[in-house]
Image (cartoon, rainbow, N blue to C red; front, side, top):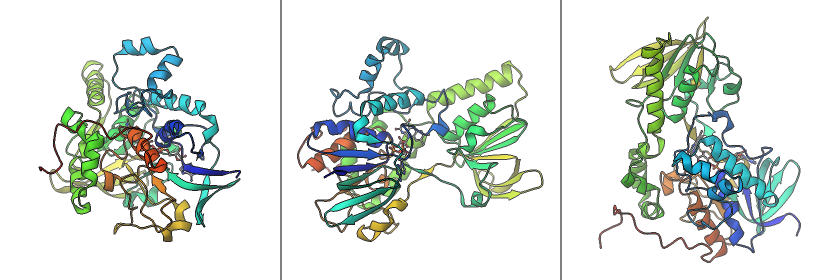
Length: 426
Ligand SMILES: Cc1cc2nc3c(=O)[nH]c(=O)nc-3n(C[C@H](O)[C@H](O)[C@H](O)COP(=O)(O)OP(=O)(O)OC[C@H]3O[C@@H](n4cnc5c(N)ncnc54)[C@H](O)[C@@H]3O)c2cc1C
């Protein structure tokens, strides 16, 4: 049947690209992945030239479960003739620009199974298959997979001001902004906030009048990349975590924040050095302040710009900052995609309205068990902190493929246990 697939994937970011690349071993499956963009792009609004990945290049789309797959990062280096040069860099991680180039290379190799310029508008279920509609075509599929990415998280008090002078960092406004002679306020001291701050003081968007970076955290806090912490990003930890009672999971994920959302330590070092060079060596007139312990509680429009009202949790009082431009680096959130409106009644949700995701990343739903809906990056609350990261994306793809095939296409159940034991003593 034309336009019918065993698995149709919505969204082509790294997570589905990994799934698509690993599908080659599940030869019988007919798969198609759709994306609204015209070609592979990875958070292009936030693509700063000096920004590094926070994950090793060996944890690429395929290598952790199949180093023989031709879509590995190493094969990308070899085919492009840059293997030896790359080795001479001594890098453990690549820049985000190079990771995007690698993904674009993989995507160009898999033309048949990927279709761009295809915005999915709705999903429904009839009889024994899903109907997936784009503006141009209708597809049917036995199984569905969704990896549509994250949405910018905007603080309530900023919502009514969103526009050319108050905006989230992941928006087109950042590309065209002119900060010359402006009072700039960045909200959020995570990696995105720090990258925007660094680019701004390097005059990427013109020379600012002054710049303030506020953060709720106690400081610009580094990512914890130590080996025992890194065990959170291993299949056996995820297995142990998944088995916990749901009520126990959230405090654990919260306590692990810096293992996934901290600032890259080398980046902080570079920023510190840059500030030292500018202020103490070059005597640069840069007027900057890094302001931790502050929570944005309101934004008020004034004749000349904005007043940002801050709750100072170090001194327990309120402060006001004046700004012309406010850049929100306030993170991202995951919601139930609108395209699921027609099948919402068939899905089960938890008390917070989130998907209930089973061990193999398929949704708990009322439809036939032969039809699965896989969801990628929707399960931090169920599978833990590795879920939004690239670290375990290949393992998750292999888990989904094994589940779909009903057999062990990928041998992923023989990884050594962690050194730290989380499972019960027996
Ligand atoms: C700036 C930034 C840097 C990051 N850096 C790292 C890092 O260094 N290491 C790490 O492990 N993780 C990192 N992450 C986290 C994570 O790896 C990324 O968010 C990753 O992009 C998630 O992949 P994805 O495929 O789920 O989503 P995305 O890459 O966001 O892709 C989703 C795709 O779905 C498409 N889409 C959405 N709706 C539709 C629709 N209705 N129809 C068709 N297509 C649709 C979009 O066009 C998009 O291309 C980073 C995240 C951000 C935001």
